[in-house]
Length: 488
Ligand code: ADP
Image (cartoon, rainbow, N blue to C red):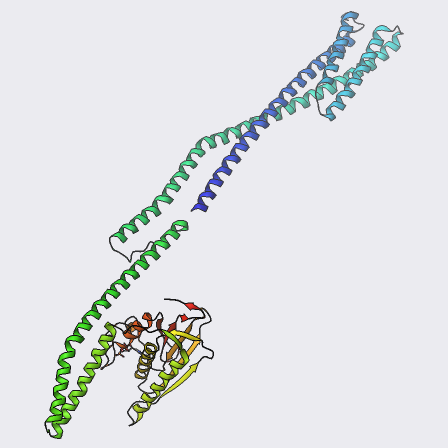
């Protein structure tokens, strides 16, 4: 917008400078032409006078010796008037070329004048007089012809110059007319353009702010360009972040409420369950039951243990144990957890079940420094991720645990990957929500607790579906003394 405005103003200024320049040059040229025209008029007048004088003298010469001949004084007077006219012509300002021609004419005029005074004053015989008179007459004719030619040339020049001057004045008039008509129109046009360019985006922005005020966080401003486009971009980003913020606040509040409910429920259920468990234990210990009834009570006890575990998970989620951060060897913690997982895997296959074989692979980076971590939390999270990975590979596969340093930010990461079924896109947003599960006997609390523990210890957890099969869960560990500690 700013650029466009500058371009339009420069274009306007350039147009007005050009038109004004043209008008000034036209006026100056017209004035010069008029001045030259006046000079030409003067020269033409002088040449006419010279021609008249020459013709007068020539007439005197023709009449000389006849009864119409003028007296000597008149002849002398005409000759000197011609001489004055020649001198005046010479004093006029002309171009160098014309000046040379006038000088030649002047010299010829002087010769003519001398020859004229000779035939008027010197006594010579009649034959010689006639010969001299003829010569003088021819000289006079030549002069007349030459001056006549000059008069015609001057007149032609005058006509040409007059036409040119008229044309110039006409062009100037058109430019003036355009200036008078177009200038206000251009100014009005630019004013309208500026008005529209500013009011349209401003009203879009106003509309967007009022929609935002009404709570429409999905409203986005479209179609604005330049600085207004940037402003609209920032506005859209702002409403997006606002929406995310509100959603995350709502989620946090929801989680807190859920945690509160879960913890109450766990407490309420815990006492009756303990009572039932003790009663069953007493019946089992003190009454001699047959095998069938004793099996039944044993199964009931096992189911009660499942309920207790669920209650413990609920409590863990609602009030996770506080963190005990210490300097830990990351690879050591991973290795311990992997070993525990290997035992679980061995138990799974002895006695053999329907499940396929899961191979556990370690890919641990060398030279990991000691990092600040809660080893118990870390182990709990890793074990949960590994158990989920095994659940995702009912037909067997490879479970890989990996530690590495990211080249981009220099922080350490731990990844748990499987070659299982992967996570459906429609589940991706929900897997960290409490009670979300796709397993028939799942609680849906594992990942929610993992997320809570990891974030409580200053890390982050994310996941991605692998290019081939399966999923990778990633723990981002920011508590590395070598890199400083960052809370995400
Ligand atoms: P639960 O294991 O009790 O279902 P979790 O919170 O641990 O609860 O997991 C939630 C859901 O996330 C699981 O039911 C499953 O659908 C999905 N999930 C977790 N880990 C994996 C994995 N490695 N591969 C595929 N799906 C997974």
